[in-house]
Image (cartoon, rainbow, N blue to C red; front, side, top):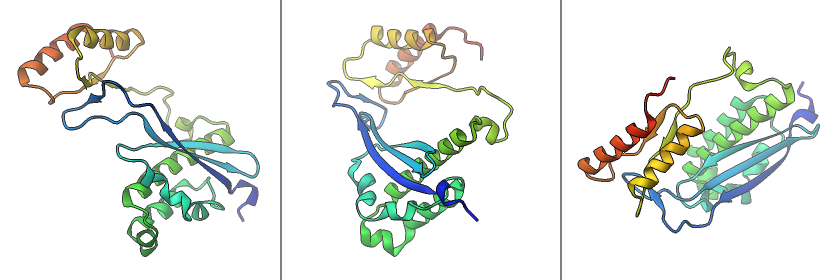
Length: 204
């Protein structure tokens, strides 16, 4: 039998965003919105808590709407130590009459289920006092990562691009994913030359 003190007792929802930028940055297809994050915090009666994030590239209002008309009632009382069950429960709502009647969009439910999944695992790690990489069965305490950079920005010149890459190199990044496709091939090739020059030879 599940201990009721370990069940989700409260849920808090926040929207994290930044003021509009004077010079927005963009990729090859669209302007990237300023920070637009859904933050979900869950807590159990015995004091365990966890939080999860989901990014929205569109208006975040529809993402938080489900919490104003009943979705939280389907989450309160669930066992956060069974994250797959909660994820499946929320994700399955994407194709139901309930979601249609309540105006819960597919995108909203997918992003919410992702944020909840992260929140559950955050709670599990804290409650167990075990790093998640160990709970997942891994033997590494470090993993290779890359940084996404070189976004386009109106008025961005070569100096700004060089300064951006230098900063990333100086703080320790060794793998880079850069944006291309937003300018002509000639212009993008020049940008890549600058980036390659600043990165130098990185050892993984």
